[in-house]
Image (cartoon, rainbow, N blue to C red; front, top):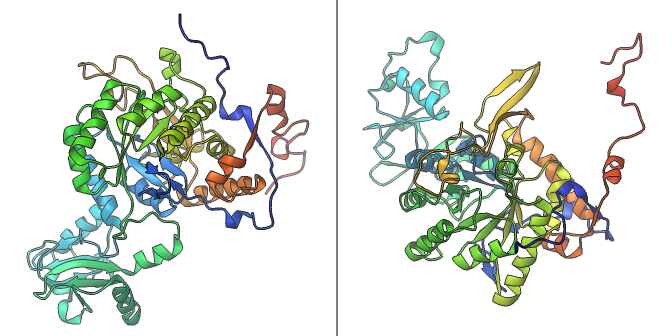
Amino acid sequence: MAYFFKEPSHTFSEYLLVPGFTGADCVPENINLITPLVKHKRGEKAQLYAHTPLTSAIMQAVSDDNMTVALAKEGGLSFIYCSQTIENQAAMVARAKSYKAGFVTSDSNVSPDGKLFDILALKERTGHSTVAVTSDGTSSGSLVGLVTSRDYRVSRMNGTELVRDFMTPIDKLVTAPSKTSLKEANDIIWEHKLNCLPIVDEKGRLMHMVFRKDYDSHKANPLEMLDSHKKYIVGAGINSHDYTERIPALVEAGADILCIDSSEGYTAWQKNTLSWVREKYGDTVKIGAGNVVDGEGFRFLADSGADFVKVGIGGGSICITREQKGIGRGQATAVIDVSRARNDYYEHTGVYIPICSDGGIVHDYHFTLALAMGADFLMLGRYFARFDESPTSRVSIGGNYMKEYWGEGSARARNWQRYESGGLHKLSFEEGVDSYVPYAGSLKENVTLTLGKMRSTMSNCGAHTIPELQKKAKLTLVSATSIIEGGTHDVLLKESVTPKGYSQA
């Protein structure tokens, strides 16, 4: 006979946190949101941490290299989408890894015989206004000069001028030798009031560039996610079909952590993928798996070698898996169940495997609820799709700005690898929709506000850290009437009525 769960399946909106004692030092500015991303043994630290518990979803409409850089600056992590060619995804990873490295390999290079047209084309392609002029036009040729936006005026030039005639030549540049440390390079930049410092070897060949803006950026973003080489931490999605070709390319491009992108993770295909990674790379490649919605699914992926486990089926705003297949579980109940299994696994094995709550987040307070229920970090699609940094277009609909947003299970995504376990290279039916979400502006402003709310809520619960929140949190189910009571009620909001003869500014 089929197994029936005794309790109904609940969503985040059906819960509230009950305040705990708040000590004098438990104020928002003292709240630490650091959280482990990968498994670790009792008494040891995880090899990868996030400074804020936010990751962006493995979706075409959300996570490209631009989103990766923007979120890394705020202490979070993006998983660059895998429903594209291996070459394109690896290129995105490489661009994100090289965006800020302290010592940056120049991606804008031209020879002295190039023309202004070439400079403008490079600027259009890379977005960078500083172009290195090398003897052969490569990133490792002999440095002969630099071109910045101050070296030319498009309105007074026809585009055919040779680079050698308007560049700043090497004898007028300040450069530094190959053994220069990052601190020394920054000191030189400040001493000489430079925007860029080329690093050259003993033969005069260009090795790296150090930019003033990278130093300024680090000071403005103290939570940014950097590796030991001062490069951004980059995640990438994979599937369980072409992983033997995709994973080596992503690792070579510099990906720090991978995640299997699938609508359902309790499968032989995910086990095969994890086994292949462990056989080829051991524990050097970090990889998450999922999605699951109960303890049984968690234990399967934990035993298969997953570094973290993703929780959630059918809870995403653009996901229609539950409607189409009747598969899934309320996100709150799923997180609670999997968290309990994670804690039991840790108790018996001494290995802590972080869990990621994926989907079901509608309001900012849901973030803290999911963490209190046991999630170590969250994966969000709709939330990030609204921002300037997402890869989709901003459009005006009915006088309001919107951003395009579509699911990986939609026909538009053509991501059959996420759902099809057989040999048909197509979607049999859709499990996602094509839609719009309200445009919300910049990522930094919105994430700062969201994190502020999370820290305030944790302060109300008397918790300085996420693990402390999970131990101290008191949660209560609420009735339908209580949910109504939690919003505005029994008043007439000012914006809904304007008195006669009165105009609002």
